Image (cartoon, rainbow, N blue to C red; front, side, top):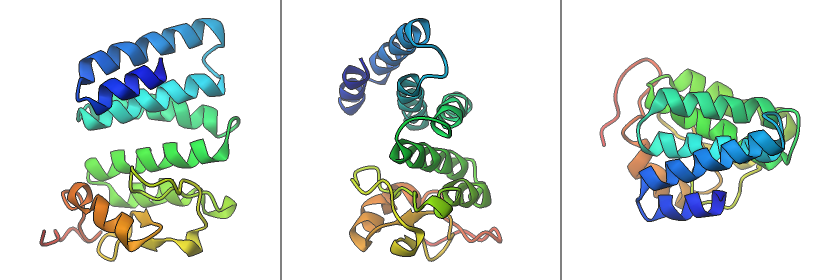
Length: 167
């Protein structure tokens, strides 16, 4: 069901994707429980979708559920991905310090995701990543990844002191 929801999301049918994610969550919660790591996969997927739909409160609710579960079970790369999604949420809300803080929680375990959605490098050492030179709140594994994400990130990027960037 998650794959079906993701496909619908990629096709731009966000309402249908939401219905499928909610159905997947209902099935997983009933069969596996609310604390199972595969339930967290659906929570994270729905949270990501809500980010794209600019439904930030709902995104935060589901991403925090996924974070709670992924912090204690499941693949570490999934945890890095959820932290990066929460970083995006904080970016969208204008709290770049919180965005940086949530992403850096993975630093001690060398488990920070590249912030380019399309990148396959999901679990990186902090020393292997570069920060956005303006806001310092987002991390990339390469210049091409940073450039690919700039169209999205530039809307939120600013110096932490409050000055906006020139896009």
